[in-house]
Length: 169
Image (tube, rainbow, N blue to C red):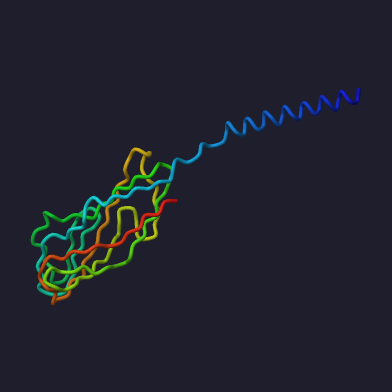
């Protein structure tokens, strides 16, 4: 009779373990979606047309609003735009943005202007943010910047680029 009791307890333990493992498996959270990130720059930052009568700054925020200081005058702000990036990464993930504080852009007639990068609508360099919706949707990131314009700036069309890194978590 003692052997029957031990066998019965062993069967109970086996049944409990099987049910416990099944419940644990059913109640576990689903795995996160794939981790592939795609970033596409879709719009360059543009400060429009401005005139320099002395040292100053011209800034375009991530909403496209222009602010000038010192001897800088915005003449035509119809083309003013923030930089725009389209980020595609599945929901449940976060992205960290990272960029240099500033870069120099080059004028068509010589000269350089310092471009201070940021902030973005999702924060400053080093900040992280969650992506929108799910794998079929795109998260937009707008970035502004500020040009430091010396009084002796050479007139011309200034172009350049700035590095920005998107790291998925």
